[in-house]
Each structure stands twice: as structure tokens, then as C-alpha cells.
Image (tube, rainbow, N blue to C red; front, side):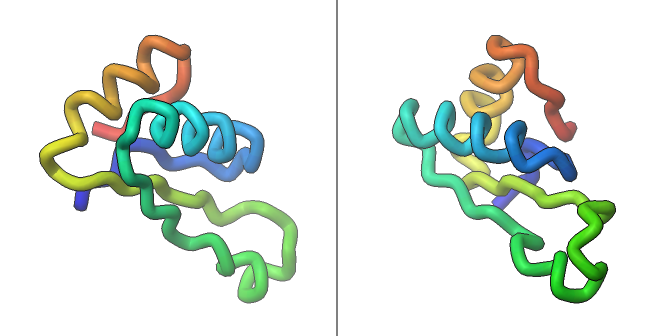
Length: 71
């Protein structure tokens, strides 16, 4: 699995997840429950991971929608 997005903005994560799911790209969200460790202040970013075979297409979808992409 490869990281395609890293953000601490929950709206960006939700939007990216919806976009990728709409393109039939399976997405795994990492660090979802880290807020328990940080005290729910939102400083630790969450990451979206996709299969290596889908990474190129996933990054293209994110770029087309003006979202930040992890390289």
C-alpha cells in the first residue's frame, strides 16, 4: 500500500475518500484513532493509503480535484 494523501483536515480526508471510492479505488485510512493520544486537538495528520496498482490513478484523481498529494 502507498500513501496518497496526508492531512489533519477531516473535511479533506472525507472528500478524498469519497472521490477515490467513487472511482472504485479501495482506500485504507490510517491514524484515525490517534486523536485519543493527542487529546483531540487535531495536530496529527491522517493518511490515506491505496494499493500500489491504484496509486497512479488515485493521485491523478486527487490532483484533478485540487487536493494535496503525497509523493
